[in-house]
Amino acid sequence: MSSKRLETVKLTANFKLDKHIPLPFELYRGIINGLLEYAHSRGITSFKGLKSEKYHELRARCPKLPSHYIYTACLMACSIYKSFRKLKRRGRVKKDKPAFRKDVIMLDDHLFSIDLENWRVSIATPSGRVEVGLLHGTYHEKFREMRVGQAWIVKDGKDLYLKVVFSKEVEILEPDERAIAVDINENNVTFGTIDEVKKVETKERAIRTAYFLKRRRVQSKPRLNEKPILAKYGRREWRRIKEIYHKVANEIIKMAREKRASTIILENLKNIRRRIKRTKELNGRLHRWSFRKLQFIIEYKARLNGINVTYVSPKGSSSRCPRCGEKLSPNGQYRVLKCKRCGFEEDRDAIAVLNLLRKYKINVGASSVHPESLSTKRGEDYPLLL
Image (tube, rainbow, N blue to C red):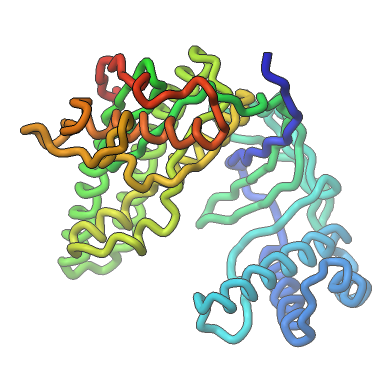
């Protein structure tokens, strides 16, 4: 029986407010920029240091503003300045000092309270506390049993959104040899165990390419204002892709629970866009492919279900035989590869899954893993219902 450990899982929910409320976006933005300039001039990265030097001055300057607005402004300024310094060291920022230009206000538990039973939120403003309704979807029901943390009010055009962080203590299984591996590609996601491998056709590349061509057609013709049209296409594209990602992740979690897996194995695809430099078309496709977002969705869904997530190197996973390690050769078809040494033959994506499993099990020292035991009982390929 596997032992378990407690781990805190955090999720952010996005709620749309049903009406506008008088919030000091301009004043808050000015406070943060003032704090950023002060922190930059003195090299202050500590929240306590910045708060101790500027809090009382700002309280005297803005007596009607609830005090915790200044508290959260100090938090945001420190976070922004630390990120700026890090990016500056990496050469990814050309500006000399940081600046804050967004209509965003950070709230702590003194500035807001949320009632998910009645879908209402109470927010402290300079003119008093205001209660407004939340426009919500059914997927927010899972947050009812979670603890409420900090939040942000975001102004997007004419709409106001409340982004709330929820947290939950989850029992995570200690990792053992029971695992499923996931191979992510532009058009499909393949996942499974040594005994069973499934493939989900996502058709993400076709969706991404179609919207890319639509945007290019819009930009090629002179228009008075093309930004709203481009933004509309961008939102539609992201909604379709996000729906696919959640369906794929749910299928992976379903298999992990059925197989009682303690771990989900993902590929470490960091810097893939820098490593692969081929044609202009391929580079464009790679930059449109948001594989990391899919991995993030799989990861948080896995942790909510008490399952570990680990990353392994994908090097050679689609080109080496999972039995003997020999270089594989095409077997008359683009997707099917065959080993000339041991005769192993399988779809290249299923081979990648087996190799990821083999790498992981070697790392955890599973004594029951033998190369000759690797075989596949291929599950039936099935398309996503889009």
